[in-house]
Length: 433
Image 1 (spheres, rainbow, N blue to C red):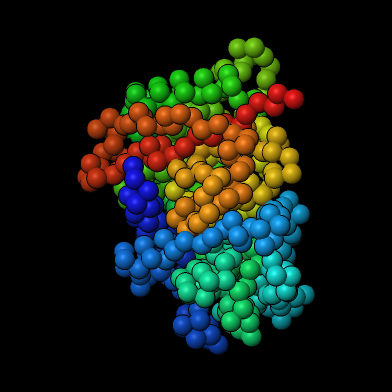
Image 2: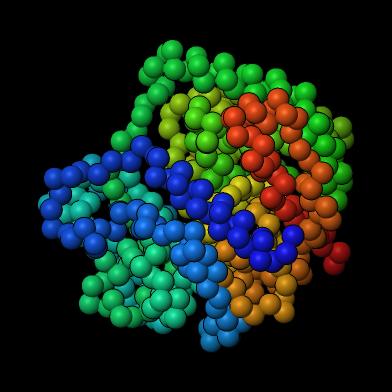
């Protein structure tokens, strides 16, 4: 695939994710006053962008080699920083149950790469009745002054920071993260017995087709071989695999979970050939859109519910260790997951995840210019090139039979694609020292 077509595809996938986010069950209190509509940080920032606009925003290139050098290649997303994020998240979440006028703080502050202090969250009329918090990380591209000047209006992260720091709107506000809080209304589908039965029937039908599929067989074969050359895996941490949804536009997340369950079952069986007492692999799931129905169905579907946990950002990131398989699929490009991982383990890459399944990226240590759609950065290129090996053919030869494709993707399945075809597998090299 040419770089141009790959970028176009990435933009299309991003647009699809954005379209999906607009359908989430999030509501906002229309009675809130005090913030102009044009400054509402919870608005759908990309609603007005057509395909050409998206390509411009997500394709704008930044010289990240120079940008990194200006900061002496220092990692940004350190464990200390992520621990700070967790502390702030806990503080904000605790405040949800306290009257606004009785909360102990109204603002939270963080430092940018320029060493200036900025507000990273503010309690105001727009979020007085919030019950949900979302961590927004900035990618390396979004921290670039020229990108912020040109396209900051199209970034949730940058727009939030500008709203919180109205006196610094002309600055490059390069704090690595911010928080958005809002009123989320859950669907509570788990309370509807008939609806839950419909979910379960659909999942069992898909599971039957999956168990008979060639893709499951190939995936199991792949991970039997991967286990032979990989640091032993003790847990799988998944990011953004999606809430379950019977709407065929979003139902394909079910296949992603089927694949993860098959990987875990394969690895458990492989390791127990030599150690029958080896503990089962743990599964940790992080996605902001999970509801109770997802917890119930996924635990039951896995046949190993005691070893599944659901966590909130940044707990999944902090849990990654040398025995972790990280799995993600079609994360919005504004979520710099692999950039965070590369920073987190820059001082000791041997403690980084044992393996990573992630969106296809161009990884080239000589590459200078990056766009949002590239997902990577020079630090990512060095991290993966020096310490990981990419599976040569990835998942190129994997595919779903027609019946399973139709089940997962609906009537237009011929125009859809199997998720693993768009993922790479990176395996950490054995330390030979």
